[in-house]
Image (cartoon, rainbow, N blue to C red; front, side, top):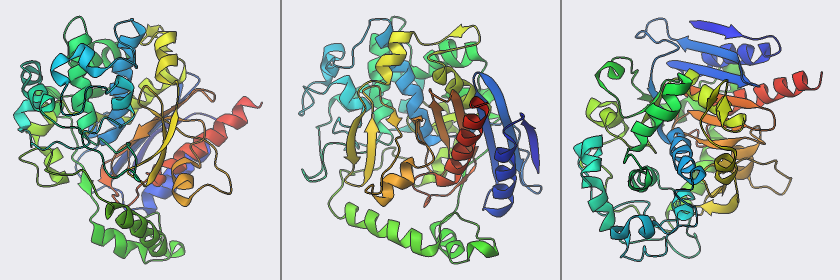
Length: 422
């Protein structure tokens, strides 16, 4: 069942959404898009035989939350309280040691801090705001030694969960009120914008959460064997998947800094459906939001830091966040261009671009932001004035670049360009 509204000029997006929801292996999904500050697409799909899923249902968007922690740090930069060139130890003296002495804030934001994983698994209760403020998580980070993979791989390695933990410690030490990132977002971003986006859920918010459901690797590969013309339930063919998996396996063979599970109680992705995890703050992997909420924040970012009468970021803060996109291959595999503020810049490709570069960028040219494990996308396009959010509950883990959601980005960008050309 699909409900929602679409503004004139964006009908092709709705048509594509209807087709994809009825073709691909989807449980529930939300799609919301703003253009020039106005909501132009607001669609929600739910399986008829599934639990109630609404446009304002909250879903874990995993790494899409990384762009929210980037906004939080940018707010401090805009107020003159922090600089991206600042060494972390200058605001957090206990951070020094273990080779971390010269790590800058920009290094953390670009996934170049050498702390992609910790050698100590944390307790899930360490992530509660009161325990974060008691430095239970900070104490673990302070004892970590910097660790990089081989020189051929480079310094940029995906800090899937740890970037948010490190950034939260930096933020609360610099913020005059000593708030966590979750508290800051509620007070200065989500609240003023009336956007359903949270890091760390309370009892009322927990009642609105829809669980995430991974599509198993076996089912995904099996589904890829069916030809697209016969209704393939996943985006890529078997051959396309195998080529990508081979490249990833070859990269993994070069070594990884993974040494221990990030959370002691975690035994798989399903742990993110546990309310103990949902209550805590892991900004990089445990943000809960609706597409409506994320798209509203993305619209604010597309407009330069403000939306309607709400000013969330100053012009200098917005500019500094987007400054100095630096190309580097993440983990020896993924071509990225992270800015000093910690969001990726997506650019046009050339004939010489690698297959992975094209998969990540084509259709997203001009967008900034990032995406989440298995499908979610939270990005903005300053030139086209687009704010975009796609939030599914079905995680397609082998869709490594979230290309099923990218199809909607590409269509929305085409629609916006046609309207702007009139």
